Length: 332
Image 1 (cartoon, rainbow, N blue to C red):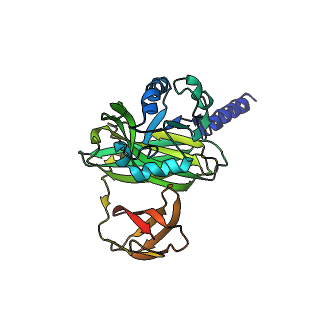
Image 2: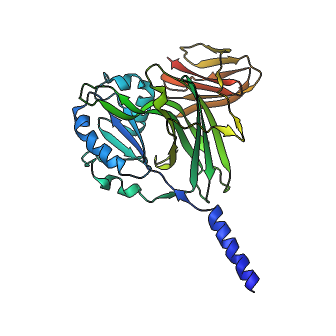
Image 3: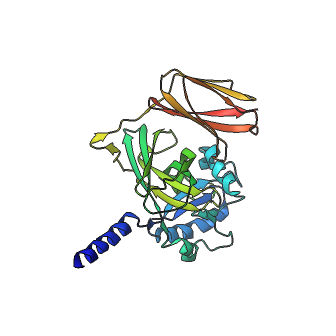
């Protein structure tokens, strides 16, 4: 009887360890603008408040409203617009915390704006690995692991880059800008594993931009509910993180795919893709909201039917073992 009791205790502890929920991090999307005088007045109090939060992940997205002349917006216009359109942001400053809009009349300097999002848990953990190669390229790995039973299904994974500090005297008097959104590496639907312990792994390659201080660039990842936009989990690296390994072997960066033919572009109803490498290639076409509109796997060539999509700007992403490539597609 004593042995049975001990076995039951160990089984109980094992199940609780294996299926333990993990802390849900706070993810803040901060819409701001370097010409906005209200931003200059309200941002300092918000940053003081933010710094008092434990492990909050902050991304400042420089919005095209109310001023498209904002330099930091112009340097990342389309991805920034995609996030603004996603939430219907009409002005600055504006805060989205874990996918929920904070009322505009809220005092951003008060800890109460974070209170509803503290001490929450999630059945999902994100681990991120990052490796920089000199001052011109980097690899990012995102591991999404199921830690406890859930009924999440399909959610959106957003992965991007930000610069922890940008020193630029904006027209509104702000001289320092924190965690500036610099690039989107992907925004795609993923099926969260239902089995505890199972993981999904995503690899990304990024290249330095002349507008960045590459030594200050870090990566972030966020999983978002497709229905109500609530954030299931998030994570980020540090600018000096260099831990991307498989066993003891450092993963080398993927090259940009060069032997790729895309035509016609602009197009009216279809896009032909030819890839010379004899590898299975994944192609995803995103709209300006970051939504995946078309997704295919192919070898050598494929024709994407686009005639039923709304006219506008789209972003094509190609990925295979030989490298990656992204391209702007205009649908007329």
